[in-house]
Image (tube, rainbow over all chains, first blue to last red; front, side, top):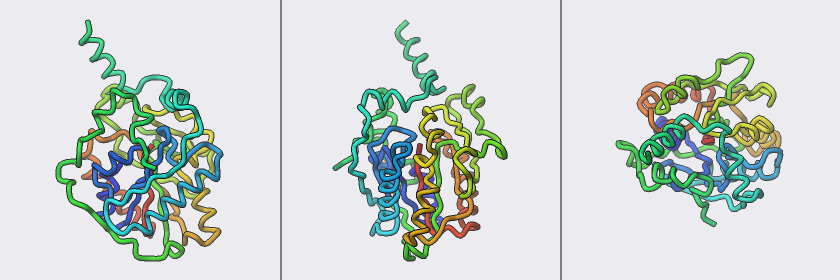
Amino acid sequence: MPVLARWIEAAGIPTVVVTMMPAVAEERRAPRIVGVEFPYGHSFGMPHDKTMQRRVLDLALRVLAGAASSGTRVDFDVEWPVPLREAYKSWQPKVPSPIVRKLLEARSAERS
Amino acid sequence: MIVDSYRFLPRSFRPFYEGRGPFPGEESPVWAPFEKRLSASRIALLTSAGVYMKESQPTFDLEREDANPEWGDPTWRVIPATARPEDFAFAHLHINPEDMLADPEIALPMRGLAELIDEAVVGGSVADHVAVMGYQDRGLEDWRRTTAPEIVAHLREQGADALILAPA
């Protein structure tokens, strides 16, 4: 996604990436980054929490329109309101993704 | 406050992301200045949550990904700004879609953007936002050659002044 942002930006359209992995977006040289410490699939916050969603969108627009140079990163200072263990479990798919399945199979083959 | 970029990532996945640096050929900064007032700008949204319109669009190709885990569908969908939450389906094998189905605004905040337009904070929205399927770092060539230029052409045709991308 950061690299897609780069290509679109290079074509002349300003971009901002709202991401739970802002350190990775920085490494990949995304031009404008908003970091959120939220579980995957929740870039703009909790379902039905309009206030939280609005605050993330406001910050994204502020960084989009106001950043002065490439590589600008601003993190959203709100803690995820669900206990970590529960949130960590609930974002993940019920069935492991194909790549996770492949990694798990490779690991168990190494062990046996 | 500095966000912990790996807080919700399984520990064994961290080495796939941390300290990898830029992709080859993508080291230098890119920059398109945001020149207009926000209140005079037309904004587009892009999500990588694998959203599609369940009545009128095909899903993303999850079967091929299932057979070949190194592959991800590089196609994209247009999501009309007028779509209702019940029009959406989600195709993504890497996340649990329950919360996004309950409230798609957490991935694609179209109603939130519409409110900001009503308040004259933002000038307008494109008619058609963009959806792709995430977890795609492994097949970048298709993206560079086809997907990205198509999305750029779409954004230009829509008169987008800027884009908010939200990886799922």
